[in-house]
Amino acid sequence: MEKKLVKIGEAAKLLGTSPDTLRKWEVTGELLPKRKTKGGTRYYDVAELQNLGDSDAPTVCYARVSSHDQKEDLQRQQDMLEAYCAAKGWRTEVITDLGSGMNYRKKGLNKLLEMILRKQVKRLVLTHKDRLLRFGAELVFALCEVQDIEIIIIHKGEQPRFEEELAKDVLEIITEFSARLYGSRSHKSKQFMDKLNEAANELSKQDAPRPQD
Image (cartoon, rainbow, N blue to C red):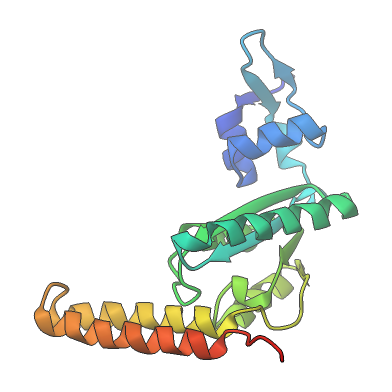
């Protein structure tokens, strides 16, 4: 019986991952295409992909920051997660998000939840618990437990600058509420947001570490 082969895009869909991840796994030798043309087109055996068991599912690392000015921190999270998993010898896929920890509609989070529900994850690795969600992470952890997905949190303690980022998350919610209540361009809304920004900045200054005598 002739084997059914599919291109990398379809293979990625079957595994619930991306073509870039499959290319990465080819480089590391973790998952090789059944055939590769001179032009570089990759073909994968459907039966082989469907027979990949839970033990072959990737370890998924999730990293998140709240705002664009934290991109360096996002890269640090990703580097730490990849180094940790590499030391364990795990095949990994990193999902990153840019958005508030109170936003449940982020693209990366939705992708992660879909993979968990389809049991396409062997384990979930985070640098800190609140990188997943500010509130409600326990619900995601409960889904992982039902699917027998291991959860690893590298740092159990509170993340540095926790209060500052929490203030930003709360400010984002109030900003959206204010825009709906007063209109995003109204003078009243702008005055309201200016006062909130001042309060958030003052809170950040209070939480900043003080130089020791």
